[in-house]
Amino acid sequence: MVAVETTRRGGRGARRTLRENTPTGMLPHLTRGLPYTEPLLQDQIARIHDASMKILEEVGVDFRDEISLRDWKRVGARVEGERVYFDRAMIMDLISSIPSTIKLHARDPQKSVTLGEGKSIFVPMTGAPFIRDLEGKRRWGQLADLNNFHKLAHVAPALHSTAHVICEPMDVAVSHRHLWITYSSMIHSDKTFMGMSTTGENAADVIEMCKILFGADFIDTHAVATANINGNSPLVWDESMLGALRAFSSHNQPVLCSPFVLGGANTPASTVPAVAQLNAEALAALAYTQVVRKGAPAIYGHYLSTVSMASGAPMAGTPEISLMNFMIGQMARFYEVPWRTSNTLGGAKNFDAQSGYESATTMMAVMMAGANYIWHSAGWNEAGMHCCMAKFVVDSEQCAMAYRMTEGPRWDDFDEAIAAVKDIGPGGHYLGHAHTLKNFERAFFMPKLFDNNNIEQWEADGAKDLPERAHEHAAKLLSEYEMPPIDTAVDEALKDFIARREREIPDQFK
Image (cartoon, rainbow, N blue to C red; front, side, top):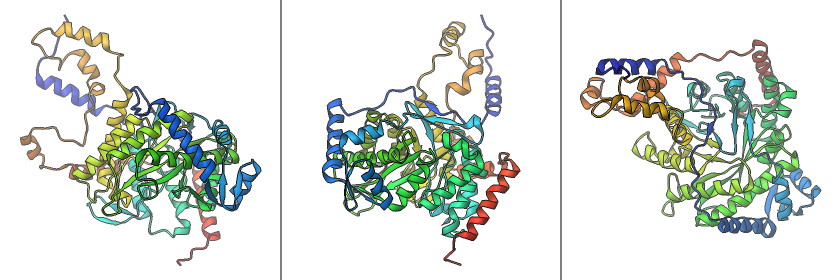
């Protein structure tokens, strides 16, 4: 019989030691251990596919960019003005060369990740003009705020990327922002990151900075940065986005081909037809990546929102968005292409119950749908108008919880745990058993930011609600942050490049 520690004091102390000594490094990419939620039958997948092919063949897609129109003519598509009509065999042949998995290489090789075929990564939100700061004040974002968000992303175990423009640095000239956003992503973390793709010229600058950081030869054969290309639904890809696509795809860097869906406004007011249109839009852009460079990595993307028929405002966390995520996941797997979705979206103006419900509803659907590139995973509020610091750290922890769930059940300690049942027997408890002390931390996820104490202890600790605890936690993380080391010569080369480009790019606001 194994000796068992039966006192509460001993068990609690041992568990506290375990928690304090647990590493906080980045989790590896998520390897899925749960089945997918797949509502579509095979004949329904085929029906959506056929409808999308007919849209591409009979309706066509506008490519509002002279270079892409010449490219499409060169490979045999029918081009009338800006409208491109596609043969389905051509589309299927082109997308067949897209890799089904992508390895993203980080500055720290130990933080490189793989996505696709049951492997997923979490990426924080981007694009917010405003923030809610550590005092809960809503204000314009600045470069220092962006630096702080990149630091928080760096120390979050379940975030695999710093993304890029988590909040807009309004104190930097618009024409120069992409340079400082990229530098912040690169310097404040050694995880993977995203590249700015607002124009072809900006994307080309990002590629040059990636060459400085990783080496020109390296990036031509290794994926180091992702770029998002938003479509103008319905059925339009514009010059700025296509220029950015070419900049990234020509250098073998992954592009997220993302139609921007406002369900009922720029798609039919019905989920399945909306998916058919989105699918056609995404396939047209995915195919174009292969016209630019055969074998270049690409990601089936989208941004999903439904529109309130009462006000016209975009909504998040609705059942239809969940259903569309399930269906799009099936379509992406049908084409054997990695896919991106958006995670903790919400329309709430504060970090409140609405914000939590919306984010949790979306996250659960995203995890069950099996997305590979899980974007907007931390901080999103107010339909993306602001990034909330408190929500950022809570969302990051929620990603860790979702990660643990989606790994699926663990069997590696099954025999050892069953043996513990024999040790304890009827009427005993497991708190001090050797198996419990060895496995308690990994057996049951214990959120740091949720309070599970009794009310007396909660009151003694200051009766703090979740936003207050999250603000304090974010401040603590920032105070303890240590910048990952970077080669001084590389850092200076990045700064020199930025200085040169600032001289070359006019700032019309000075």
